[in-house]
Image (cartoon, rainbow, N blue to C red; front, side, top):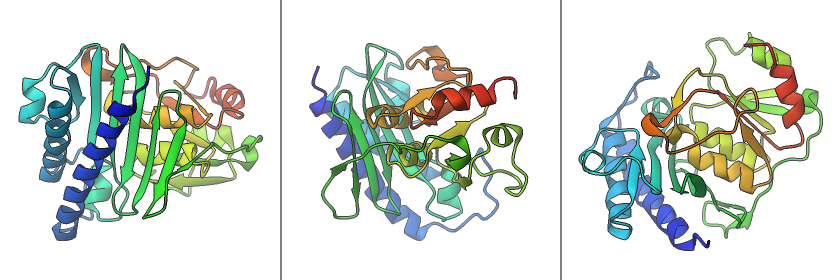
Length: 270
């Protein structure tokens, strides 16, 4: 099936949200000690912007999203056609005003990822994909170009991206097991997955015990369409659209070449 209409809608929804967020970002008073659990009015307004547009285009579709907003409350939360939305992925980056946040919009058809968009409003970086159509990137006002994962073949030469750690000078046990050459930290999972899809990082490691579909779905498709691999930390297939929208297997995204070696290195660490 051709998902051109859904991808076009996802791109437009993310763009509308991104423009609104930039306006709020310019006036937002920085919160230097913003906690991981922070949610702002900007999150809720961004989500309503996205869902309102998608509802106009696809009034029968279901919505799965992070914030409790009126449109989400009134909508079906599971269904054969499902939009999965994170209105600000990396709200701490928004609140701390370091630019480390993204807008994530994904479409899932019959449980299968079909379209995904990750927009980084501050840095004007857009990465998007549709099932079977590859992954594309657009930076600033440039024309879109296809993007591919890296070709790095050795873990000790790899760039790993992960969430900010309490002490970056002390790597966690999983990071020590992987032994990458470089570690890049950012608040947004969408950005991390886009980095892998663009070939700017080789691995993304998420060791959280539980997170949600909206945290990863859009970026997951980017990596796969760019030629990479995404699984749980023990190689599990990740599923979307289940009740509760929970993900409980962690996440490893890679350029594909490194995936088996990374899974082997992680075995027994957790």
